[in-house]
Amino acid sequence: MMMNRRAFSAALVASATLLSTRGMAATAAAVKARNVVLAHGLFADGSCWTEVIARLQAAGLNATAVQNPLTTLPEAVASVTRVLDRQDGPTVLVGHSFSGMLVTEAGVHPSVSALVYVAARAPDASEDYTALAKTFPTPPASAGIVFDGDEGRLSEEAFLRDFAGDLPEAKAKVLYAVQQPFQKALLTGKTTQAAWRSKPSWYAVSTEDRTINPDLECFMAKRMGAKTIEVKASHLSLISHPDEITRLILEAAGQNTD
Image (cartoon, one colour):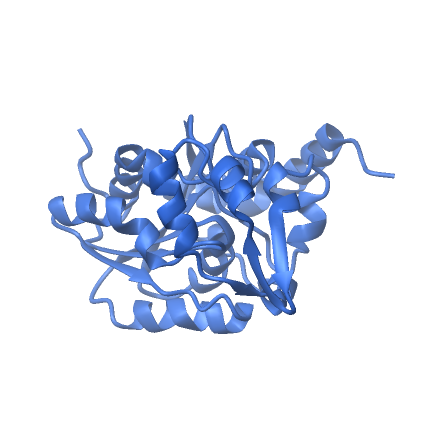
């Protein structure tokens, strides 16, 4: 029988309080960074960050989008690490959706000064994220995943309704056309580290999310002690609300957002 969601959440929050204390304290004073590395999740590619990148560049920051291969977790983490290795100085690592797994794992890189999660997974070290997610109601988009052998993608109906629900239909259809398929093996990986235990963290919850349960997003943000904002957006807040997401990243970079 499924554990009562509120009871489960309360128990995990209590057990994680000590772990998140360092992150909560660190968030109070962000290190000034001029580099931002952005990773995309499932059903997307690096171009999903273009609206945010343009705003970061206008603010004088060096922004780089990772092309996540969506094959296995180790290979996806390696794609982030290679980009981090090229950065000169403190760097904010940002992840959307599934790539929160990559932020959590690769975020221990010495160049990373802060972590930003955008409607993203935020597991603890060795945690079974799938089991955690099952303690919350299943979001509608999950039923729209279709497979061709080991290759998965989101159906057009689910993409338009449950993934990009607050975007103009014409724009959502373009994004659907360029979605990058993922391999089943990617979903079996577990993080071995939890960078949010020691790095200052920020989280943007999408309150209208139909791809990751918004209550799960709130739980993960609270557990890590992240500075959290709520955006009335679909799963693609980085596209539908780029100003809000950019301001959050600038704050994590220690930039003046007034």
